[in-house]
Length: 291
Image (cartoon, rainbow, N blue to C red; front, side, top):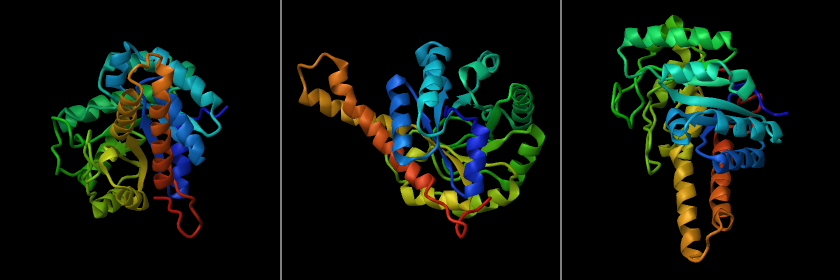
């Protein structure tokens, strides 16, 4: 069985000086394609469900159960993570069945609140999640690409980040270092010196959101500087939709989805494998970092 706790997978990446790829899942096709891509790369990965994806499906349980079974059957270690969860009732619903559904981690997002309110809400969720054996990620401020506390160009302050982690007890921190959610091209430039300062100041692993818009070389530099989890979502949807359009144009009479969804699934799998190769190249004793 290769379903693994997120804490274990991130700890392994941290010890190796690599990062763990976390890939957004919208459907069974997405989940199977992510698993296939990770297996092709021989790398661990996270199947990641956002609050928006859960709302689209009408609730978390069916897709989580599918992810659990896919991870259990995978030839490479996979974990299950919930991303950008703001709804406290959804937090309670998932934590009550986390072990059963295979959920190893949750990113609780109170980033649009002011600092003190964010700390209080995040600390409460972290305490309850830890009681359920669930690893917790949080965000200080909001990564670019959304309305709220962080507009593009705003950066996480290392001192404030260290204080936030100490006050909340979270296991990982998503930081604003130049990436932005929902980018349709890969032109973002990261503040690598800031990542290095954050790595020195913050005792828990750092997470890069909005990685779809970051070029491979920038992601590799970010991992070398201390990023330990890399979230990918929009790029998967771009690959899926582009391949689907091509298939429908080439098969205008097709009505059986199996005939035109194989290529989109393969497109996601190929992209996941490529991202895994960037974030988790083979580490050697000379290059491995524990930052």
